Length: 483
View 1 (cartoon, rainbow, N blue to C red):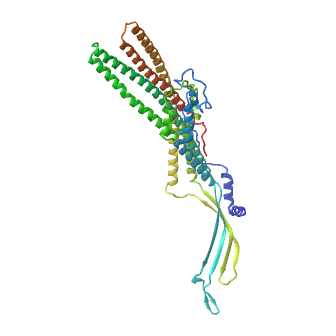
View 2 (view 1 turned 45 degrees about the vertical axis):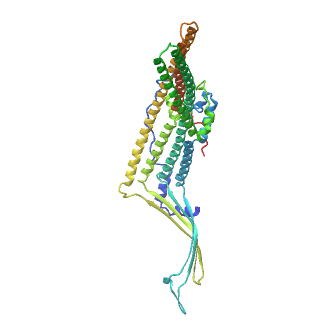
View 3 (view 1 turned 120 degrees about the horizontal axis):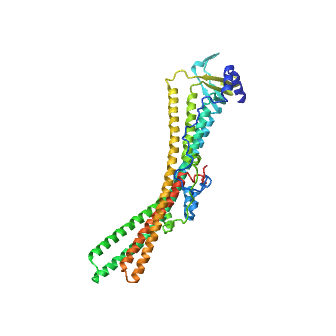
């Protein structure tokens, strides 16, 4: 077959050979993929001064900074079993296969063909001494057929580059899903722990209010109270009790959401997460990645960049359709023919050829494709810039959210300290006969109400940390099996 292709090359005109040598080594229709991106700011406007030097390597397993073994196990299960990740992995495999399809067009195609037949036709009548004879013909042929489109102007190379860029985009889509998954698992887990603490506080608050109602009823029976106080306290008690099923429903829903993210049945997680546990005692440090680092760290920005590369390659391939195409072909094999009682004819056969085609008239189809590809490139370039601005917005908002949650937690800590002191003083005054028992119960109820707000603030701080790492694109480097 190599000899046949060599003979096909000899059949080409000198002009075609010269054109092949000059143009096959370059891609004259390639499009510049430089992006007029916005210059990243030098630093963050709302970053705290104590931001640690967390680089991309430290962002890999940021959730371990909470020091919660159960959270670590949940993350591992999510990375192994989440259905969105499994879908994204399958799409990566599909995109990689399409790269091989596109690259195969750069090489010759060789096919094996074998055919045979037996026929008898009246137009083959021959005369014989005793009359006329219609001979039967047996024919068998087989061989190889090769075809090669020389990529003079880089059409096939650019299509392969586009497929490769799209495959890279499929990987980045997987990374985007991974970053979102980690943030969702951690956020739901932290909110679950916070809600379980709030449920415990609410139960204690209900007990206090039940005790206050009992005391008021006792006072009324002794002639020291009135029905108005009892009705008001019972209203408050029933209202507080009404919050308990709502809190319980939220906790159950969070467990169910985590189970879906892990690809587990809800009842499998309810047994392991139903028991109340406190929020993590520590949290990861504040990442100190610079704005310019987002370009390489955030997978959505990396995805937008691959879209620009793929679209630019498609535009170059569309432009290449304006130029001629050179095709070399070769067929070779063996054939045998036997007619009637005559001796058989067997011989090797071959055919060599080359062709050069150039577009003359196509009703503007090629130019329309070029215009469409150019418009598409403008879209993805603008989308890249937009995605970067949204990334900056995302990080700045996360910094503000974290700072706000820290300030609120600080105020709630101070409020809880004051409420505990008020409860202590109420007890002291009650023991000295200055205040009644109802004052102690009221101080204790206020302490629980403030404790509930403090837990909400503590949960918000933990969730804000997760949002910050999600905004920085942390976690996509975590190990995940991609065939």
